[in-house]
Image 1 (cartoon, rainbow, N blue to C red):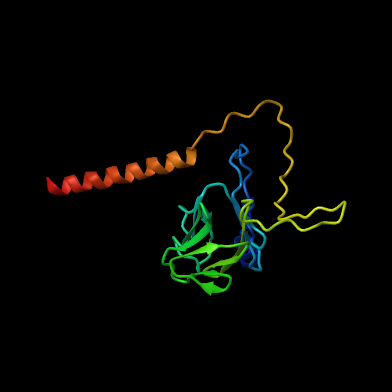
Image 2: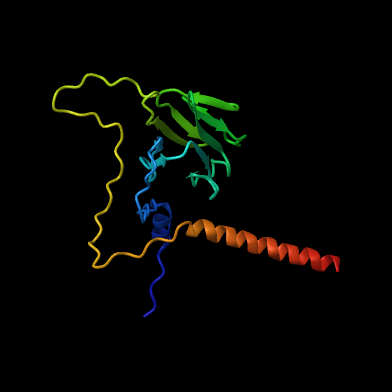
Length: 196
């Protein structure tokens, strides 16, 4: 028998459900420099983006390091940049603006502490893991410990019977370059055919 088609309500539920994060094939050895946590209500609330490089691009486009799939976010919206004196957010002339602590910025703004940042309609909390930008620890009662953030627990994997094959390095990136090269070759072919 042919599988039944999902109802309109089921399709909408599938489209609005958060996409589970794929578990990486390896643990990234680079240190975590900062985090962005989504504060908006809805299925993405609490989603955390980990920054491991001193420059991260934020936007709706697939080329961004922090991809926010929301129409209020520009294709290339902003960038987060770590410099000697701290972290900065730079608005890339986005349509709906970049806001720090509720104030729209033009150009760039230094991020002091753990401010709320809004990219279009997506509100996030920025937290640097740098010791220099973190406030001094408060005195804590004995036997307790403060938790700055909670990351989603990893799902336990079944013990493999044999070692998994090594993941190809840069497979997605290589595929992107290959597609780009093919497009350039096709365009070049048609340009040369037009001149002949």
